[in-house]
Length: 292
Image (cartoon, rainbow, N blue to C red; front, side):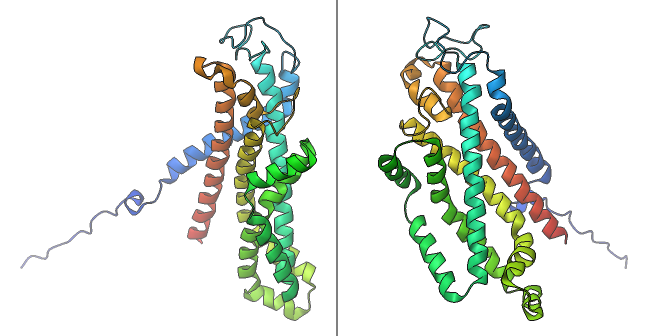
């Protein structure tokens, strides 16, 4: 009797199991990285590239269309939109970046302090963060602005207070898991100090997720600051950020004026780019873990 050779069926592609192709993930991640780099360069060099001062009226035509003289048109007063976006991006990206770094740094520091501290201090810090996280970010921002007025410093402080508790909870959950591992217990047995355990044993092993969370916080803060500016409570005239550019040109909505479309697209590309870039970093980290 002839022997039958049975061939195993080809392996099903990863997409059949709900996984995303690494080539697709890499492509989208590169697009996100390019968007982030573009807006970072605009925020740094935009004020020097702006052809006109931010508040200068350069045309008698309001809500002018795209032209060689004004590549992004003019706003409701006849000011050059290209100049206002180049300068306004500095406020949006700069304020959001500073607030995100402060929120993530303070949240992570409090999380490490909470994990290596006595139980009573851990409970005190955790309950304090729970109290802050229970307040919606926009409500807290409205309370702060109504109490102290609008300023750049206040906007940064409001964003930090709004998003630091979330960063704390994520960092603490990772730190608690790492603190229970054997090498941390060995360090305790050696008699290492709490500061050494927090900074040398725990922090390096949670740094990548913390950086990924930092990127997400940045996107959330951009939306918060843009929403505050849209309500007239953010960056005040004559300065402007992307959110205030949308608000002040809302009258051109029925005309489809570039003065309102371009700032809205700028906010969208910035937040989408950050999310795509963070997704790429997360996917690469997961693949490295799977390879190990």
